[in-house]
Length: 377
Image 1: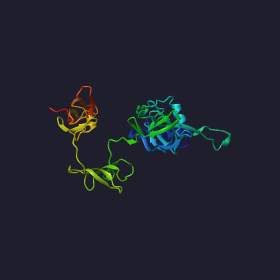
Image 2 (image 1 turned 180 degrees about the vertical axis):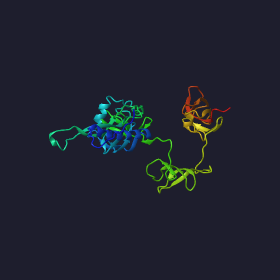
Image 3 (image 1 turned 90 degrees about the vertical axis):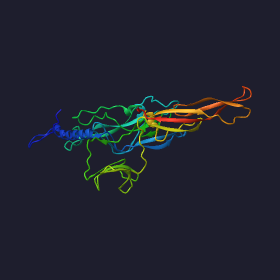
Image 4 (image 1 turned 90 degrees about the horizontal axis):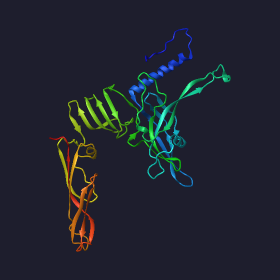
């Protein structure tokens, strides 16, 4: 569809549609800008705030939940403005989640997502000419925000954006603001969180193929305020071209932890840990007792192992104890292995003068771990 804008001429008689088109054209333009140049999410506020309470008589603990005032942008480019704090309704939760799934053996539910979405509500008004004797219909539309409770899994569900030429959506797009747990036995919320099941509340962002500094400096930091300890990445041209990663000192400057100058000189305040090359092997060894989780070689982390970036080869050998319980003569190992979590399982039996005397004993073992980076010759 071709984008059109209204024009007027002297003496023309304007209908309501002519004036409404002015508002629609500007609102649609703002929505297209927001949708195509920004990512949806929370802009400011909209945190879930807990107020601890207890049930009279039983003393059961629960929380009243308040959604703080704030601003969000949905995926259609629609603004969601919560001007004042809003309470979360337990009745609404139960209406939207009949028989919610609970944790095994409990009356407390699994995490349920909480969303906000836009709702347009017409406001009726009387004109000055008609006074209170008649109505001319709605002259305003309230852009309200509604709290909605989803089902488990809804927080990661895909939502469809409108076509490039469309204006803001009709309020079906939902912006995640948190998660709640509900106790079905007392009919109250008991906990809230900003992340659950691997999904977190997202902040509104920017889509850009280029970010250019106006005064020769671009800064990217983890928080809006440059408080002490806030991490920041700074691209600067003064006194010379440089790239600096560090933390704010609280006085407007960034203490470098990692920096590169115009000549490519690299300066690092901490240690440099390089990823192993294909075919390289890291070794760790020692003595471990039954139940111990074997440590990984230096420079190898669990995430790399889990992703397949490193293959582990583990060997364990039982160590025969020098002395045993009273009335035992000799020792024989029974089991010495490592489980999937690298936990040692190592034990044996002390045997007395007669085979009827047997005492099971946890023992230690010698271990050797080879961490190999696959892909070598």
